[in-house]
Length: 299
Ligand code: SF4
Ligand code: SF4
Image (cartoon, rainbow, N blue to C red; front, side):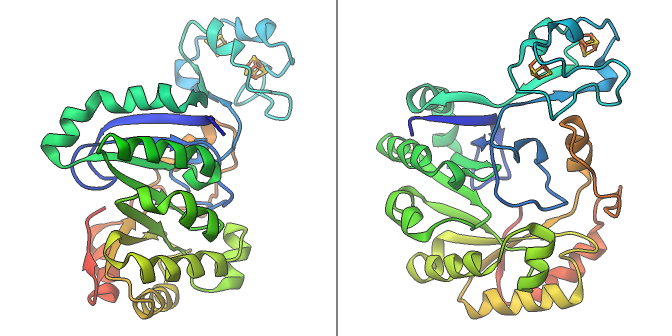
């Protein structure tokens, strides 16, 4: 696959691996974490984000929509069942209240953008991080891109949910990766299925294989989500599990409500049990103690 759907490209990122980085957010993720901080990249299709605060109510978008998906009386404006993501409404909106999330790139056109900041990567020890969504959901393209980046001598990292076919990942991605930021969330398989929608057996098996091959190049990341992952039972079990696998480096990702409003912009339901405030430093310090055997890497 030589074309990928990309949700965004973030330049000058400081938290997605070492140094100054450019982060590519691929569209599409097979998991459905209620706390997702990038819910606008979950769908594998282009979609329109609506920002009510910028809408001047002119109504220009309504007749422009070929699918009749826009209703000025409707909260959120867009009927997501009718919208096909064509983006015509975005072009006519004078208030920039509508934005298309998802743009197609060929490997070469994306590479050209990513190499623009090569100097920053070189002076800071940075590089490129592939994120999402889930980058391995577009594995063929990502393999081609990583191969080209390595050919250019660029440091590469991937942020993954770990839910991928191991043979494909190991066959076409792993050799081109300097760092794997690997998320684990819930230890209990039934809870993982119930809350996130897929089994965690595949994820933990992939982590075990990865640690066996590249123990120094993996950081296990644990999101600290009140009421979901940040419970004594889950954190104890997760910490024990990844320690037993031989994981050396971990990173704890404190909950932030940032994703909630982003979900609303693309018409996704928001989990009302999630707090409106970020997780405080005291809580984070508490959970860090469970990982005192690991090198804790700042997110
Ligand atoms: S993206 Fe296309 S189909 Fe969707 S609301 Fe806009 S104009 Fe209508
Ligand atoms: S065109 Fe833009 S500003 Fe005008 S009603 Fe539609 S969303 Fe609002």
